[in-house]
Length: 185
Image (tube, rainbow, N blue to C red; front, side):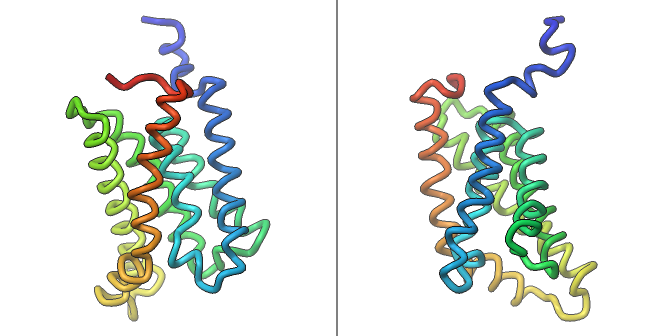
């Protein structure tokens, strides 16, 4: 067995550490910039974009870690997201990063764009489902239902969803073309 794989270095290379740190920094800076627009976090989902990109380019361990750290660090630095949704959002973003990395690793259609979009869509849906389940079963069990979940996760957030569907694949492909991440096929 290769020495790098034996000690997990394929997961924690200098390149991945750097890209993961940049993703975490962007996940703090983008929401901070957007806070001047009312409800921009709920509408444009600025913290989600770097987390999804991190899952794609750094793999699931970094996607999971950066996804879990970003809301916590944001809350400590800017008090956003508010404490009422901090736990749900931390888990949601960790799931985004994790699923983006895992799905992208295993989905191999021989078409990179299809791989990215299928992984991205399932990661986005998976994170939203977990967020909804946490609210429905634990945090707002008495008052959280389908209408609230659909409205908050899809209707209010549709601009952010569109931005994610356009921007995340474009960034992943651009990083690959710039040879900052290895070729897929």
